[in-house]
Amino acid sequence: MENYIFKSNSENDTKEFAKKFASKLNVGDVIVLSGDLGSGKTKFTEGILSYYGLENEISSPTFTIVNEYTKNNTNIYHFDVYRLEDSSEFYAIGGEEYFEKGICIIEWGELIEDALPKKYIKIDFSRNLDDANSRTLNIKVIHK
Image (cartoon, rainbow, N blue to C red; front, side, top):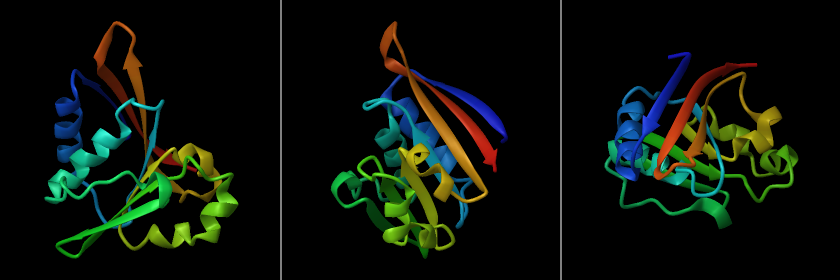
């Protein structure tokens, strides 16, 4: 899947799509979620975690930068880098060391783009101005 557009009509659509998306993920995959506040990034992460039976574990990593989850020997790292000044702060917490250890989901990852691996999946979330519940997810595989 190099480029794909998904139209979501509800939070549930977003979570169900993310659950199917998660079934194709492997250790070492990095997913960058970009979009305005309230555009669906955390709901998408909930969907990924639900694939692993961890949907009740999610909490926003806003104040801790990263939350770690483990299920069936798979590590999932959920980052929210919104509060970081730049990628030097990401390096300071050893952020890049997580990339090979598990699946990384990074909200606001465009803020640390120079710290991201050579290949990652970027998902841009945008709202439909005519329908408060609908979102468009533009999914691209980035090769730097």
